Length: 365
Image (cartoon, rainbow, N blue to C red; front, side):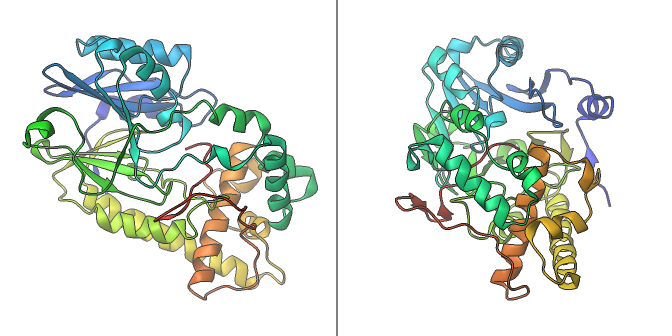
């Protein structure tokens, strides 16, 4: 059974590899696409909610001058100037969601909210080059051929880019109401649901009075979100993701507003589909590992299915494939279903821990 597509213009744009339009979805609620250059996802869907003199922006998108032009144009369609934004929420710490938050906050003075477990980690290293070398060593331990180690590892440029991302002015946990609009008077609040997996502190937002669910990257209509094992990350991101899917099996009359692809109806159905897909991925990984005489993360990743084929994966997509495979191997190891495969590098000392595990290093969707 397929979910019901509600964002028909968005879906048409997605299939045509075009840029979707700004859309008014409901009274005071707008969808604003922001370019995500150099990435197959192409854009992030930012959401703007206006109530009286207040304006909330969720996932302002990747920071670029082009993106800023799209964001301000979308705000203008909603009758709002960038300086009138009063609250900013990022569903998680990735650059295509949080990237423009600093610029928007500087212009508007609006505070930035992140999930309680989405911790800033950048102070744990002093030398980006040393951090990159640690990551390259992990690639070697994962069995990556030396000719591809640098391709799979983080880069100094990428780490320096992350230094510019915003930190949170306030934190949000499950059951919290977003400090915006009706919530301030105790009526029809926007409720937070923590959904670790894609990142340790990923969150979603439920607007029960509108039967709307802002899902970030947790629920997408067609794609299974990447769940990676990262340095200083959640020790079992696959397990966290499956539990988070159970947490969002809302009534299927809700419309889901994802950060990528297009809107759809049926969060409960989609959550169940993604649980099945995740369990099937773990089965593939376990089967591949079981038939190899000396399996590694790389050799298992090479032998499981990828939508475009493993040999087509390069740079960021290559890294994501390795990290996703490692996450499933780690999950299976914790269940006692695979043994003897090196997935985790030694945790550096002095790392801040959250209730969902150590702070994660994230680079991408």
